[in-house]
Length: 201
Image (tube, rainbow, N blue to C red; front, side):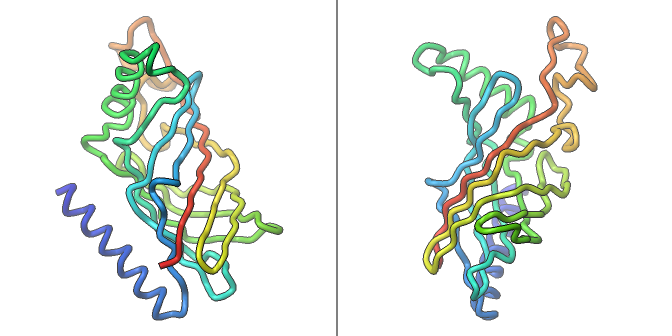
């Protein structure tokens, strides 16, 4: 079922691309190697990679929409040295994937960019639906965008989400689980910074 859903989403992106071409718009596909989402929660920080996606840009080189697939199995920790704390890093990353985000059940998160408002210069406000852990909420954040006829670079300013808005309560101060040792909690706030590189197709 998950595979079918992913295939359908790829079809949606392909149709989105075709419509962009027909409407004299351009589709800029995300480079998944150069793109990443940086996260920070409590004392830890790391990154998440994208599976696919892209922006639709009009003739004036202004972004007008986009769809993105985020690979939740790609979560990485960056604050611990894997050579020194290899086992701890592995356990921590598996805990994030399996206990917090339930990546086997929800392997992908999705962002549907619905509105882009220019603030000044290269600074924009982006608004869209963010689906995580099977729940969709609207989010807004500011980002600097450098758009040419062949490429697009987006670097968001740091912004925060509350994980409990997406039903992620593991070790949350709002609803700690009875089996959490010593009553440990992990803050609900997750700081995010998005860096996307895309190329026109």
